[in-house]
Length: 157
Image (spheres, rainbow, N blue to C red):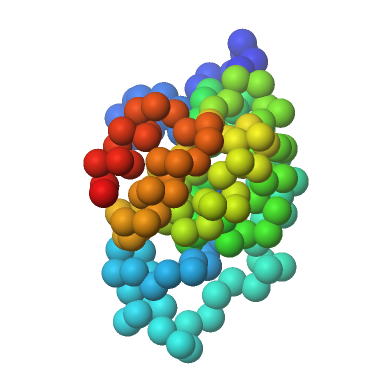
């Protein structure tokens, strides 16, 4: 953070340290938690790809917020792993000094993406409450997963 810049603060005066970035409105599940069928039915229109920020634009925004005191970028969605080139986004964000990267996922695609995401610089993964039990096992087996996360995921069954 530049010394001449005041950190961003919320309405209670606390410094804003986490930026949540939704990189897609799409998901491969229709769970009641985040995409109930009564709202996201067959006729629901998702955002056109042209309306989404590019990976470079997301990185530019994250870099600006990091200069204002943000220390964690939390990648969310929909389901962020359905976004094309999410590993490249993690690579781009990992170049921002002092920034921790986290991702919330239902975990259904982690079998193929956990290692590339970790290699790209992802530090934390968190599972959705709608994730089925086999997803908990995938998260627990993913390398390199932080030890506290493995304990929490194993508790899911």
